[in-house]
Image 1 (cartoon, helix red, strand yellow):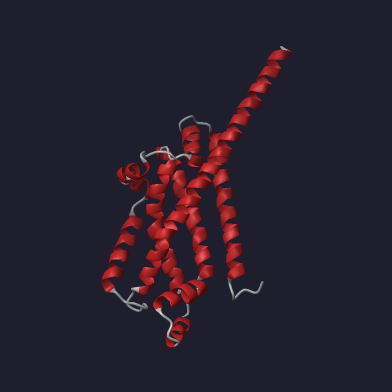
Image 2 (image 1 turned 45 degrees about the vertical axis):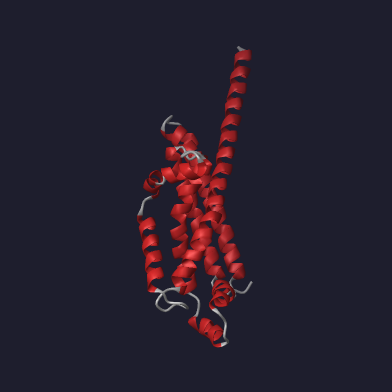
Length: 234
C-alpha cells in the first residue's frame, strides 16, 4: 500500500512537471509570435503612418490620391475581425510559410492585422507634434525627410512608445485567438485543455499568464515613455 502511495505521488509530480513545461513552452511561443509580429508589422505600419501624415491635406507633401488609398486600406483591414482575417489569408500564409498552422504561420495574419492598426497609432502620435516646431524647421530650410526623422519622430517618441505598448498587448491578444485554429502558444493550450478537455485549472493559468505578460509589457512601455518624455522631470 505504501508503494502505491509513492507511485501515485511520483505520477502526480510527473504530470505536474509536464504541465509546467508545457506552459513554459507556450509562454515562449506566445512571446515569439508577439515580438516577431510586432517588429514585422512596424516595418509596414510605421512608413504607412508617416505617409498618412505627410500626404494629408495639411501635411508636408499633400497628395489626396495616396492619402485616400492608404486611408481606405487601413479602414478596411482594421474593420475585419482577426479570426475572419486569419481564415481569409490562409492561401497567403501557405504561399509564404508553406503551411497554415503553427506559430510561424500565425505571424503572417498577425502582421497583416497589426500593420494598419500601427499606422493609425503612428498617425495619431505624429499629429500631436506642435505645428510650431515643424514650421520652425521648415523656415530653416529643412527637407521633408529631415523634418520627419529629426523633428516629428523625435518629438513624438514618448507617444510612439505608448502606442507600441498598446500594439504589443493587442497582438498578444490576437495570438491567443489564433489558438482556435492551431496557432500555438498559450491560446492553443487554453483551447485544447480548457475548452475541449474541460480542464478549467489549466485554462485559468493560461489566462493569468496572458494577463501578467500584458501587465509587464505595459509597465515597461509606460516607464520608458516617461523617461523619454521631456515634459516629465526624472
